[in-house]
Amino acid sequence: MTFHGEQRARLDRARAILGSLRATRAPFTRTTVLEPLNELALELSNVGAEAGLFAEVHPDQGLRTAAEAIDRECAQLRTEILQDAAVLAAVRGVDPAGLDPLAQRVRELVLRDMRRSGAELGPAERERVRTLRDELLELGQEFSRNIRDDVRSIEVDDADLVGLPADWIAAHPTNAAGKRTITTDYPDAIPFMSYSASEEARRRLAFENLNRAAPRNLEVLGAMLAKRAELARLLGYPTWADFATADKMAGSAAAVRDFIARAFDATRESGAAERERILTEKRKADPGARAIGQWEHAYWIERIKAESFRFDPRSVRPYFEYRAVKAAVIDLASRLFGLTFTPVEQPGIWHPSVDTYAVTVDGKPMGRISLDMHPREGKFKHAACFTWRSGVGGKQEPHSVLVCNFPDPAAQPGPALMDHGEVVTFFHEFGHLVHNIVRGGIPWVRVGGVTEWDFVEAPSQFLEEWIFDAGVLRGFAKHVESGEAIPADLVARLREARDFGRAMFWQRQLFLSAVALELHQREPAGIDTTAVVRECAERYSPTRLLPDTHFEASFGHLEGYDASYYTYAYSQVISRDMLTGFPNGLMDIRQARRYRDLVLAAGGTKPAAQLVTDFLGRPYSFDAFAEWLAPR
Image (tube, rainbow, N blue to C red; front, top):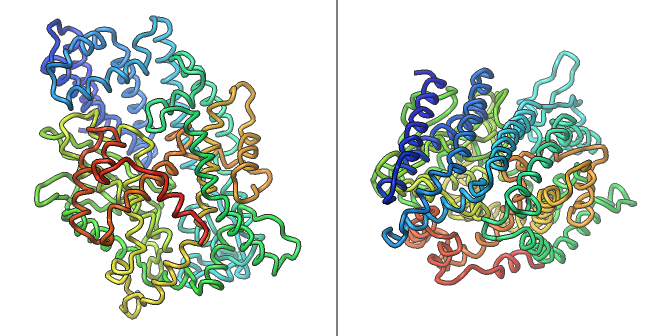
């Protein structure tokens, strides 16, 4: 059956279940209401997940377009269900006293979802909510599509490549005019911005990168902000920021504002010291330098690490060949969490470069993962974990897909070497895969995933720490030519150097968090999104913005996370505290399994704060995050 036919069949089954639910009469019970609703949620999850995935990764543009249409239809049906008066009456009619605690939680969350979808509004208001959600989904798809499809480039001379690794230069041959093309895709942009000694070339590439999807996405973003604001007011919230944060751990936009300010205060002293250190280095070349630009921050960070910490990030690249890193990530997850990964053929795979593995947990089959790891035309441009199939205990095993843009061994004249930062990203995103797999036995779709989105990054940020562990690195990082393990003194310098720039990194994250929140608090009529970005930069950005750029046009999280980009910083607070649960070292397998079972496997069966309390034996605290960012 074709993609379209399969999705149509699922949507038809969903509508049949909805019809039965509407016809259900009292007494309403778990069996007659909650379980059919769970079946309905599973069908919609399958449709939406596959359509959303294929829209971002499938190489056929026609199928990507068809997937977007299916995704819209699925979202429309989901809204229809959540607004349905008969369904609302049935869920309300289920007596919570007759349910087990988990089913009670499901019922409460479904009722909350229905309220937040307008189920309690009048007919005209419900119709307007549906219209706005339809329009927002279409705008969001266009926003993402414009980012995905707009790959820009510059041409450079060999003089602009001074500082770049030899393997990277070899992968960028000259054209007939003797120029080399550098694109805004990650494998090009990240090394170039970090190592090229040519400020002018870095500035040109930054200009192109920061203007991707502009000007069209500025118009799309303005429309999204206006419709989100109208939708929030219809649903009883003063702004979209208030609506978006009400069901998170933070609980309100005001709490998020306070959190951003508190977290920035924790970075202030270290950030100022880092900035002055960079300016001191920059003034050797430019005595009048008073600011650090977006186009030079990464370059000067790496210069200081090389000169002051005797750590040159290029020196570790030969130890991080893509295939070896992939094997190491899989091996670490296996050892820590009791998983096995067996390569398998996957029907319906969309590209020959995608690898698929069957996964077991403690020897029990628990689903599959796929790795789509290299750039190509029309593919998602960042790094993320997508759901292909949600895990539902007793009904369906999970299948998640890691989508990244790392160097491709098949497209390189030599080995596909990775920067250490890319390796950290690999570990981070693989953490999402592990989370999705181990929670796959939960029987209820509604609580199978994380229920508070500002916790969602914590488990993956937590896993990043292992890639700085000397034992982990020495176990897999072998020189691509000699086969020798990465030297212990190089690992020590890597670990020492990683701390420099940390405060400024989190200041940038808080700047982005403030942008996302502020855009969704302002009156959208006539809003100048670039002016808002620059206003937030004055308060939070550690670097000077490049003039005449509009990075918000390619800030993809404004569609996915919208007002809640603060999630990354909020999750990091929790992640740093959870690391205190490993007093005997990161390779404490007993603690890793406790963490797996108490935090990861529990999914959304409990509030996120309770999961962390279960693991640590106390509520989480801000202290570890503040200490981590304190001056040294």
